[in-house]
Amino acid sequence: MDRKQHIAIFTTASLPWMTGTAVNPLFRAAYLAKDGERKVTLVIPWLSLKDQKLVYPNNTTFGSPSEQESFIRQWLEERTAFISGFVIRFYPGKFAVDKRSILPVGDISEIIPDEEADIAVLEEPEHLTWFHHGKRWKTKFRLVIGIIHTNYLEYVKREKNGQFQAFFLKYVNSWVVSIYCHKVIRLSAATQDYPRSIICNVHGVNPKFLEIGKERFEQQHSSNHQAFTKGAYYIGKMIWNKGYGELLKLLNNHQKELAGLEIDLYGNGEDSDQVKEAANKLKLTVRVHPGRDHADPLFHDYKVFLNPSTTDVVCTTTAEALAMGKIVVCANHPSNDFFKQFPNCRIYDDDNGFVEATCKALSEEPVPLTDAQRYELSWEAATERFLKVSELNQVFATEREKNSSKEFASVSLNLWKSMEDTSAYFHHLALGFETTRRAFGAIPGSLQPDEEQRKELGLATSSKHSL
Image (tube, rainbow, N blue to C red):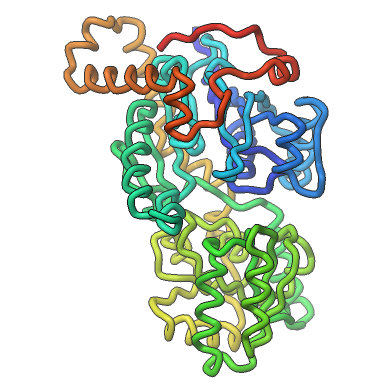
């Protein structure tokens, strides 16, 4: 008897933390469920109150998962203008201050009942499986797809002993992703390479930005008024390795050629004070502001978005700026390959190229996006790309046939499969001890949820897991 395919999307963050791994999986779930052809569950972290205060902006906290779910659904519906029938479930998480990341606690694959375990989409699979101890993902689900969001190696290289850390992390990432994922999607070639991976940008743009761009275009042509009355800006988390280091260095080294340039920087982050101090030393007019939502009307009048960052995989704010009809000046880097197809994307190769592209962008008007170009930026197009590269329908049919007759003995005959099983068992065994977990960098006490988390999420009492 045919039934609807079930897709469970696991991610490493949730609103109101406005980070890519909170926002993009949320839109993916909504658009995959939109046509009603498949069942979709979004599985997101639940944080205790003390961690919520560390992570969520503007002192926003939630007393229960249902309260946070209501917040998330309202935020989404205000931006998509449709109600999507996907399910939201929570897994226990803890915030690692040193990593500025939320890490799973316990075996989060258990959140999905076995009878619904068709397809798992792991958003940041390396992040979700570094410290995984429980049932093996490939055993639980017929198909496991990992989507690589973050260029962890580039971030680590900039830390103390960065080259050694990056070498070790590259091996660990490849190890866990290969033993837990059947297929890997890299958003761009800016990430490390993985076995069985394909490069495809399966992200779209919040529909609000496309609406802003369309309104701006119509306003310009109906009234003959100048659509963009402000110059250049940059928006992003205010830490040095999110583009601010590169941008301020470029501005400092070319103050003479860029004389008269005014630029506004928007963001919050650990390096805000240092960024302000560096900006104040320049002869150019560089104003530093607190962070805001990129859809805020404040940004509608800017014409040029400067983004020299090379740590992104696919920069969300670049896509948003293009959707709003702005000119974007960005580096010739794999993270920007997807954007090269748009006429308002101005790529530079070196410092002189940055100066030339910036001056030219400020002197010109943006080219209006065609309907086809707008569609390419949309979540509808991103969902089509995801379904195509994942081959979900094809895999689901074949895997169902295989699973009905598959025996463990036949699988063990395959040497590669046997080696992979051994590797997975070693990971499972090593991550089952608190001392080993601590040595690898796990949060203390993250092998099992604590009683507070169990109570808040309605979880059963502690039990041992099997591979």
